[in-house]
Length: 202
Image (tube, rainbow, N blue to C red; front, side, top):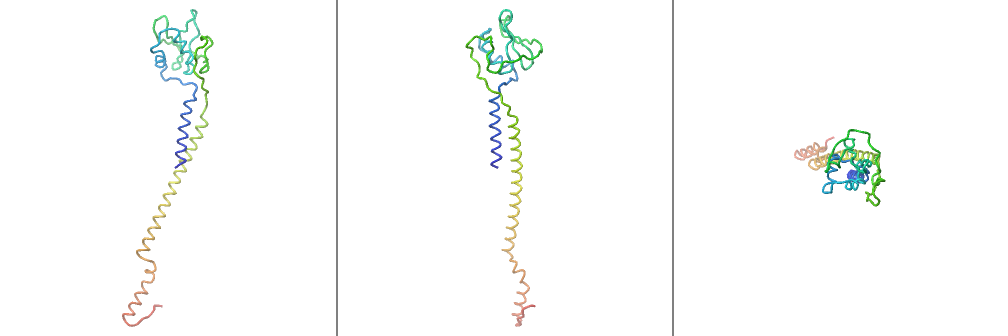
């Protein structure tokens, strides 16, 4: 039982650790994620530049500057296409540009070379493949489940044996075996005494 709960706790800890060490986490709704990042911030190039260091950590990045030095598109990892987000429109937009090959992303936490010096970037987090460890934990958990089931079966068998012994002891106490064995002889002795002729049966 103790091993069973220990393996469960270990699996939970490893799962939480896996969530923390995953380098790239792609939002299920990247459009909503983007709107949440720019919500309450001024519409303009600087807001996008401030967001750029975080984008590789969610599987995205900005296009290089265009002819006028603006970066107007963002890679949408959900739909696998570049998406225009501004600027001639005067507000944030979301216009897909067609499916294309994914870009080569910067490492999570690495600042693109064209960002202004001193731009803060997220702390890079290493990517760790925990699949072998999780597989090993699942195997240990399965083994502990088998041990737990076998222990239960042994416990049930012991309880049945104890119940059988208790039943035999109860019968012995209520009707001793020696009484059953010698009951005919005792009757003969008592009968002989009553008749005045004591004789031990052969």
